[in-house]
Amino acid sequence: MQPVEVSVYYLEMVAWVRHTVAAPRSELTVFHQVKPSVEYYRILYNDVGEEYRWLSRRKLTDSELLSIIHDPLDELHVLQVAGVDAGFAELDCRVLGQIEIVQFGLLPAYVGQGLGKWFLSQIVEYCWSRSPDRVWLHTCTFDHAAALTNYQKAGFQLYKTELVHREY
Image (cartoon, rainbow, N blue to C red; front, side, top):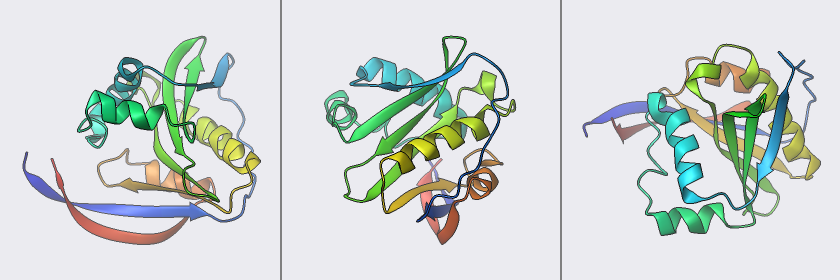
């Protein structure tokens, strides 16, 4: 793979500002998938991240990935539409007082329907229900074109930008 220059944007929320987002359709649910199988996780990760060149979890062996996703302080939250998986968020709560939204995205068939804004609002509300000092995430120029704007509209503040070379 050829390394390319990528802008990485780091965003945080240090206080919760409620952004009420109406559900764009009925039959939406978000559930916490406790101890997902590696196979299930990889399907979600690959299907959501394929277009955006997500690589970090693909590089892990099954045992390395299992040790992360079965850690009780790493949570997988799945968005479903009428009982069908539509996206997921992975939350890393391993640093005291912080929650990192490590992964967040929708399956391609569900992009552009307003589901991402609603799902993000649900995830942010859940994070703040745990009383952290900070909720943070990062996105990059490989991610969906609306990602940075959507995070900012949800109340995240940009605190750092860096240029990195990443595999393409």
